[in-house]
Image 1 (cartoon, one colour):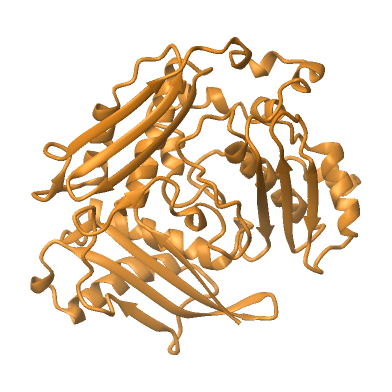
Image 2 (cartoon, helix red, strand yellow; image 1 turned 180 degrees about the vertical axis):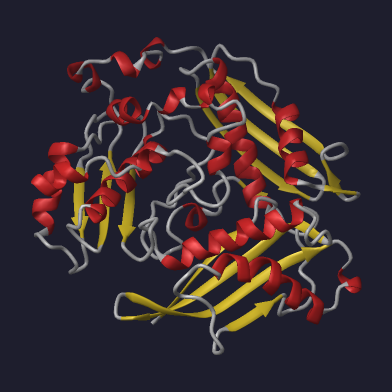
Length: 392
């Protein structure tokens, strides 16, 4: 079997929109951790549109934040840059709701049980033993390549690159184990495509991007690996050539389509949205199951209904890799993990994290995945329930 996952750089229009949306979330929560906010963004050509519904005591300048994000990404070309692009916003301020303005860190168990989900969703968490990050190998390498592609641009190692880029990693499996790298595809947008021929581009990408990512890995490209760099000619990227929208890269944000995901956007939502934080709780549970050695792969499914505190369904699948029955793992998770909305918020302290990270917290998650990150101290990526699971 060959499985391929995709990732994109921070300059991809969809990812730009995710970053703008989460930057807005960060700034609301920094000033007022009890803010309710839903931020969405769309971009095309030289226009960026922001729609925000919020209830908060915070004051946030949406256009200013969007321009900061665009500038940080590195868009400074004549057809799209932070100074001249038009930014339209449609804010809708809602009245403050005292029912939402509680400090979850001070709630008792009985009080947590009174905070119901405000939306309905079925979501999934996944983990496997293919990588140290307990993530599928294709999406881990795809995200690493996309990040490196952006890094060599920022550091002027390949100064002719533009912010938008895409990568694909194809992995050949033997059974359920990754065996070799089948193919690598890199789509890099160039400032002056005619000044960089395909041979130079390929050599530069292999030397500066692919080799550093794989040099310490056991599974790396071999003589049979197909390496494709802009195989269809110059890649015309950026908002001037294709549009972007918040939440359109759910596979990049999660498991690279190797495992199921809800399809709901993770970015642009405050931590009282269970479709965001529930995905983090499900990943946390699945990761600890695999880290405890109870299974080589684990999927945790949670279903929430409006007005109900606990998930209406909690299911576990280990795809035949479990050391104990799936039903027993499910019982362990139900006993030792918190899946109630306010309980997740309390355990992860999600509404209070942006104030402790002045350079942004949720905004950083908006590129290169929400799971398996080693560059951030994410509460849902901790293996602190392993001993409890082992004890049963």
